[in-house]
Structure formats: C-alpha cells, structure tokens
Image 1 (cartoon, one colour):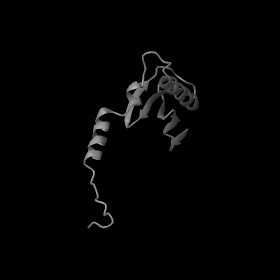
Image 2 (tube, rainbow, N blue to C red; image 1 turned 90 degrees about the horizontal axis):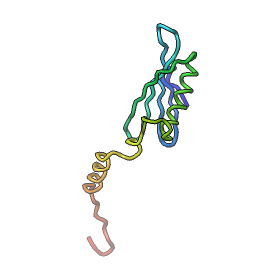
Image 3 (spheres, rainbow, N blue to C red; image 1 turned 90 degrees about the vertical axis):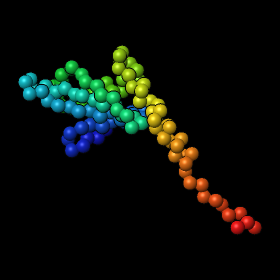
Image 4 (cartoon, rainbow, N blue to C red; image 1 turned 120 degrees about the vertical axis):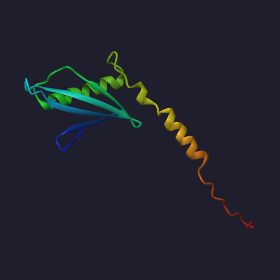
Length: 111
C-alpha cells in the first residue's frame, strides 16, 4: 500500500487496484471513505456510510472492504465487469494484429 502525497491510498490485490480516498467530515470530525477498484483500464466506485475515528482506521477498513468486494463477499457489490478485458479493447487488439505491417523476409537465393 502507498499514498500519494498524503491524499490517496493505493493497494493491490489479485490484479486489481484499490484506491482509498479518506476524508474528514466537518460536522463531526470523524472520517469516511470512498473507494475505487480498477482493472483493465476500467473503474468501479463505491461509497460507504461508516464513520471512523482516524484517517488510518478509515484507510485500513477501506482496503479490507475492497478485498471483500473483489472476493465476492459483499452482497450487491461486484467487480465482475472489471475482470475481463472490454469487448472494445479486444476488437482494437484484433484490428491492430490484422493491419500490422508485414515485413517481407529476404530468403537465400531470392531477391
């Protein structure tokens, strides 16, 4: 896990990136988080209602929740659409392969 200049916390789990954004609530001083789970160039965002006493506690719980979502343990929250490359990406890869330049190879005895 690592943090960009004290703003966001990033963790890696089973090929996914979990991005935790902890922020302090002005009215109560408690902390809450929003999280993003990323893979294959796509992102899914989640938000929680829980409140935490410290920023560190919020970040830790966020990463735990992200792992549970990835493992399929949180009813109603899924990252199934992030698991496979998108159809558009697969189509682009097929086009790139089909139209990639073919360089002729000179064979011995042939020009």
